Length: 174
Image (cartoon, rainbow, N blue to C red; front, side, top):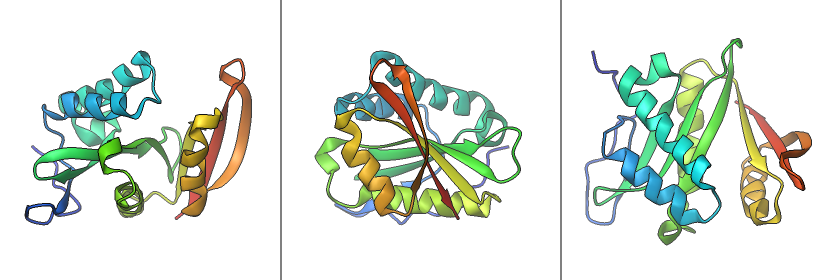
């Protein structure tokens, strides 16, 4: 039985941003395009982003633990978020991915995806969100984005991803 979406999307209108939770087979290609377009992620990371979509398609959100929120404009996915409960915890969630195609940057789409994802997490019983990101200089805008939305740096793991590339962990209580 298909899972019922928690947030309803607005009806499509030219140039209007809509949101959906349902994962479609076509999302695999669209997510690959978005993640590659950012220039931030390796081929392995891009493959992982697509694998999460495949896992959701095969098992559903609840069984896979991967929930998605897609931002669309005129039927094209322009950004997305992926999040899920952290196994072994009662109220903690990871935000695994949030990405917006560079053609659509500076329009508030990332902020809207994050705010809507937080509402979905809260509705599912989540009370704390964790986000991991790289410490490389190219990620400074990403880290500033999270800080501006109430996330605080909880931990820093030096040389986590590679020599000179640490992992910064942010958290926010909902």
